[in-house]
Amino acid sequence: AFPWGAHYLPLPGTNDAELTAFLTEAGVITGVTNGLPVFNEYYLCHDPKERLYIHHHWQEGIIPHEGVPPKDREEIERFLAMMHGYKELKGSDGREAFAIPVSFSSADEKILALDAITAEQFLADNNFTSTYLRWYVNYCCADDYGTSVAQTSAWAMVHYFASRKGKALNAASDSVLTWPEGNYWLIKQLRKNLQTNIQPQSLAYSVNLKGNGVEVLYFDATRNMSKKIEANAVIMATPQFINQRLLAGTQRNLDYQTFEYAPWMVANITTDLPLNERRGEQLCWDNVIYGSEALGYVNALHQQVGIYQHEKVITYYKPLLGSDPRAARQQAYTHTFDDWKAAILADLQKPHPGMEKNIQEMNVWLWGHGMIKPSPGFIWSANRKNAATPLNDRIHFAHADLSGISIFEEAFYNGHQSARAVLKHDA
Image 1 (cartoon, one colour):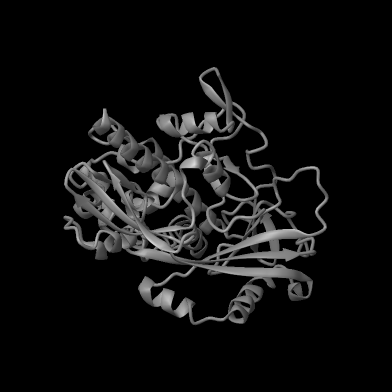
Image 2 (cartoon, one colour):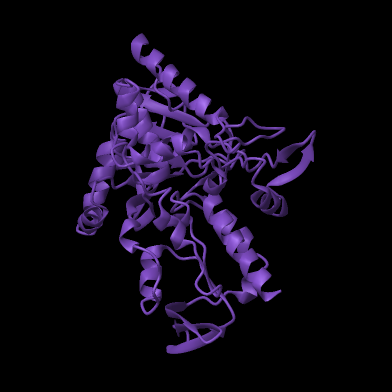
């Protein structure tokens, strides 16, 4: 098993009651002791967790420190201290400045002012000039948002560092939950009790308000025919660029063009290399290359403890950064498999020389619209909020892009909110 998309879930905060309940139901949380959740040890990411290839060797952890000049290290510490301050900060409305779900965050205008500038501008305004620090912050933005510091809202950048407040009895607050197949494991848990209600091989192509209900037209590929569903209410757990087409005949108070999506390339590679050719930290779950435009690779078999792994499967991630996502998508689709393979190997051969001789299999997948881009001014815009507004209390919306941040927690929260609204309406 290996992931093709998101591959981990940070520990949830205590304010996310619905997500905590789901993780308990799924056996991820096994109990509560002294008010703290106890997580299933099999699902907590095992050590060693992270390493960074820098200065021709692997260091422990992703924040650059080995071989980094004292001035740069001091600047990195100053930045991290500032982010910790934001983590503890509360707005004038008494809410946490940065929270998950995003809608739990403070609406204090002084804090929201960060959404008007880029992360790059934030770094410049606060005299953060270290090349090492700027690389690290850019890596973090690319990792969670598929955007560079020049494209990311400063509010979103700070949110990355200041919103994670998970607690556990048996894990550190920065621990993550992970599975060999990535977050697909979570999807399997969600659908476990709904399998008979899921109709695969079907493609919805039109959704319209009709009378006191909703009409859905879809194509049933198993019978090679179009069909119609008449429903009291519908939840559209689809991104806005899809909704624009499904709701082509419906007026919405929404500018679809402000919803931009970052394209990604993901590759899964089977190799018999030990992946420890260079000195330093041994193979970890997350393995990052300093200075690379990609995010490195995850050892997909990391959680399979006690099993000798002659062959390894690594998942390589690369957001296709660029100011114009449409152009990046179009360019990506002009590349052949051999083009992608050459680019991937050119990057991986820095820490793993001669790797091309030890690859058994490589598969590449392109996500044209991988995740919503939290560009300056987007997250706290009226347009984003309008996108979540139901139509006649009949058509409801649930997707991570409604939060402006594409993480599992936001998708789960938005889906839960829409489901509750539909149930309340039916009652």
